[in-house]
Image 1 (spheres, rainbow, N blue to C red):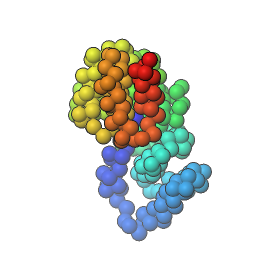
Image 2: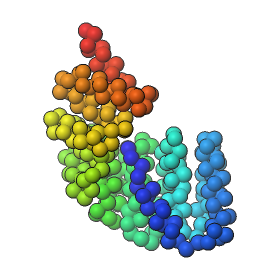
Image 3: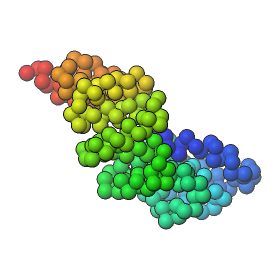
Image 4: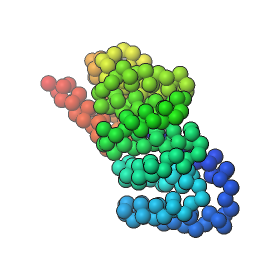
Length: 255
């Protein structure tokens, strides 16, 4: 999954919140202390400090965005802890004054719920995001990807990702999702076209290389699949799906 949602708008939000450096300093100190706790993986300690930061911040929206950024810019990307923290504020979502920001909050909840393994929780959050902002292509893409990974409502997933691409056609991750949905539908030739385009757009993403390899494998092009898997593993040596697929393909070649 791709963690772009609120990270795209934090700069604008901070620029418009009207705080002076002196006013922001006490709250910023709490945020920075929370980040330090994250660095040691003291998630409980981080959550306590982040809660104080949100409670004391003059901008509820910016505070949530900053905490989201703190979690998801960590190398380990602790989605479960980020979701647990952010979802507690859902009863206060109406306090996010700008509707598209509120939609962004729900999109984040959907993405984090999926990544945290809350498979029965992500759909309502994505639906709420799209109800608030029918043009939220991030929600469309992430919702489609989640459905594809779960292997359910694949035709709906296809409609969602095609809507996302119609709005924003130059995002490699969206073409990857499109190709992955087609792969799950068994439409491998169509999937290949989309996944090649995705890799051309974002060649340094191991998940995209793995998806392309998976399609090559289904089409019987095992050598091409292995080339893509080697590229994925060069980018991320411990990439588990690539390791597993390579093991399967090498086992087949040995027989």
